[in-house]
Amino acid sequence: MSHCSFITLSCTKSAKTVKQVWRALDCEDLRLSLCECANARQVTDHILSLPTEKRSTVIILLWNWWTARNKANVGEKLLSCDEVCSKVRKHLVEFCHKEEHVQEAHATEDRWEPPEANFIKVNVDAAFCQESRMGAWGFIARGSDGSFIAAGTGAMNHLSSALHAEALACVAAIESMSNRGSFRVIFESDSLSLVNAVKSGDADLSDSGVLYREARSLCVLAFDAFEFRFCRRSCNKAAHAIAQHGGALGVQNLLWLDDEPDFVTGLVASDLATHQA
Image (cartoon, rainbow, N blue to C red; front, side, top):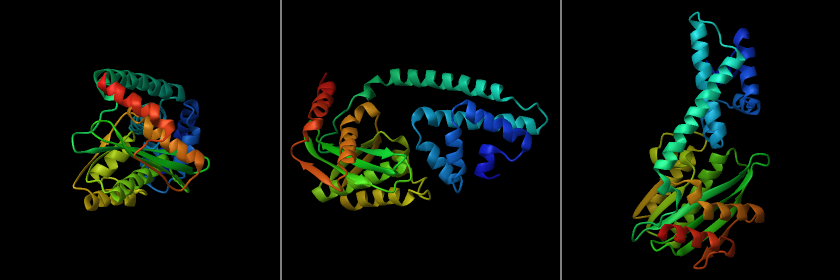
């Protein structure tokens, strides 16, 4: 079964129901965009690039519909649109409830932490506009005492997804730190999909796979020690602000050395104060 038939289903009886489910959950635009994907890998990449709430909804929707369809195939009654939507909403509530407990258990992870001694931490982020397919990258590097070391931003065009933008931002940050002559670097991003892709190599055959491989290769060549880590959005505010700044300016490359840009001074101070509290 192709990825498109899984999303819409060719069976006349079930096709109408599944389309109603996508519309009822306000996901019709996502269904259409997924149908435009050329293969299963692109479907997966597109889903993983969605905002957290939408991503969770789509994954749970697909799982519930797959279950309902399999049961219908063995002779059970096909669930109605309302019944499927009810199951999806129920599982979403349960999932969000569990997420809240996980966040409470790891509350200390909600604050930025400086790197270990002799390391530089580089927070990376990307800005992405779905309509224009444009965006920007941004990074900020700080030492083990929380002091500012460097920052940079630049505009990007012809982006295919938010994850594509994150991958390009990662490569740009690595190149900048390599040119600076850094040797022991921790790269931190609030894109779990990006961090997993770079660390594991499992997505090397995806559309952005060449960027994941490039990121690893550049690090091996440039640094004595390096690591990629996931952080929450609340720990990545400075990099986010820098990426947004680059997108607004539309500049190709802009670097700050020694003194942080004025618009992130408060964020840098807040990160350090929160850590020391």
